[in-house]
Image 1 (cartoon, rainbow, N blue to C red):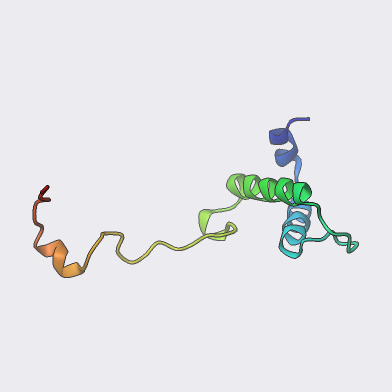
Image 2 (tube, rainbow, N blue to C red):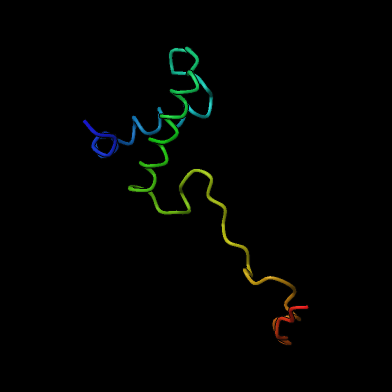
Length: 85
């Protein structure tokens, strides 16, 4: 079974268990995750969320700023060409 096939076979309950394991650093039985297990679980969680959740519900989502332009709003009104000196 490939990683992609494994992700497609995950159900929401397993996804939540993996996500909790990553968050707490341990399995439901209390056993600690190794660094490799944590990394693989995190990859699975991210891949599952990418396929099954809208962006605003994914782990680590940061809403966009009100204005994505650089500088101040006053600067937007008075655009000036970039000068290379």
